[in-house]
Image 1 (cartoon, rainbow, N blue to C red):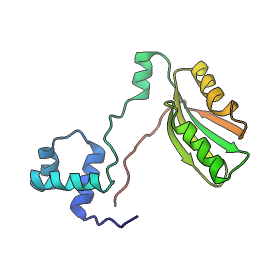
Image 2 (tube, rainbow, N blue to C red):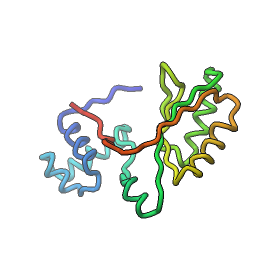
Image 3 (tube, rainbow, N blue to C red):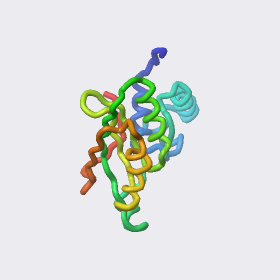
Image 4 (cartoon, rainbow, N blue to C red):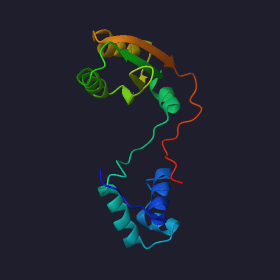
Length: 160
């Protein structure tokens, strides 16, 4: 992986976009103190270099649960019997393909994976455990923690 050079303007652009990626190019340029064409070129370069992976809307699980009915979020620790590269890759490929899996982390030490999942309710969660864990003979242990309250959720990375 080649090294990427970032100056203070790049860092200010990235920080501003992490706070609000929906703002116009003109507003972003004014906030950072550069011209709109320069801002556009710099943001495009940051995208091309892979520093900006994608832009998304962050939904409120609590408000969405109220609108749709129930909502359940869980953090799940998974330990596998076999931890060879092929077994880890196979499990990872299968779980990241499931829409209910919001995050998948391969971790060490302790469990092999930590997942963050969203389900409509406990029946939906039970179906998720069946298709992702119970049916997999290599899954040794599953430990789930159910969210009672989201005290903080901040996808913003510190840049300073």
